[in-house]
Image 1 (cartoon, helix red, strand yellow):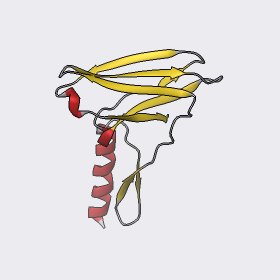
Image 2 (tube, rainbow, N blue to C red):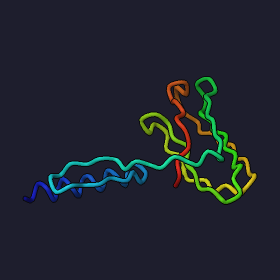
Image 3 (cartoon, rainbow, N blue to C red):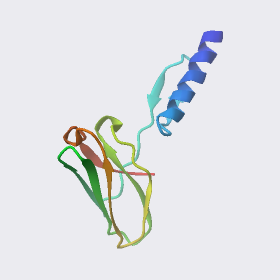
Length: 111
């Protein structure tokens, strides 16, 4: 029983180190990542890569209300923060990364 407690403690520490990845732990000690809800269709976004220098994202809120969104990349390769976009607001951001073409933008999710 002590090993299960150690496993859950280690799993929680890894989740914190991974930048707040939300995990659900069952009684058997398995973990699975929480599924994020997609951003509404009135929030548009796209991502691109610039050579081997950076990955970038462009987001536009065409909704009539404030929207909180986070860009996502395949396999959670890049961890972006949560952006609060006012109606009509456009935001562009970039991160310096090595081998930028390997980071694939997958969309926006609510946060």
